[in-house]
Length: 172
Ligand code: IMP
Image (cartoon, rainbow, N blue to C red; front, side):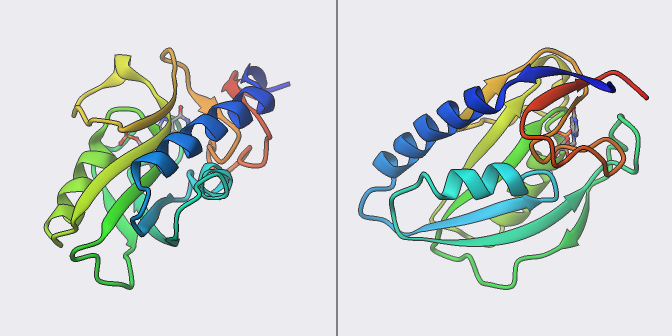
């Protein structure tokens, strides 16, 4: 077994339902523009949007700072850009994990230049001990210790995204 279960599927489900209620309250009467950060957030985003009870559109932006392994390169590459104009829109960026914060800082700066009406951030996980570039997370699932985690969309070298829970990667 290459991992230990850290956050169970049940815990994730319950927390996402709370986040969905909170987001639905905050955006009542508004149209939400959900932007999911690929690849890691695809599972979290799929579950989260189904718990948000306001009109919404969902799109994807691709960012990569890892080139395999468990350490960030510090360089953020946009691998897929949005196809629509976000000027005047209420944007909710959905990320799987904020680790050093470098990716989100870069993405926030990029999107803010396009003049959205608002820009908030939802992240399933946050590893505060690793912060290099602080970002404010408006909707946070769980704060975690400094472990390399996999599952529920998160990968190690492209693998383990399909696990229903979050696990701590223990090597092969
Ligand atoms: P940051 O720029 O260091 O905050 O890293 C953000 C990205 O690194 C995330 O979107 C993940 O794709 C990846 N990442 C950071 N920590 C982990 C981890 O523990 N497991 C899997 N991917 C991670």
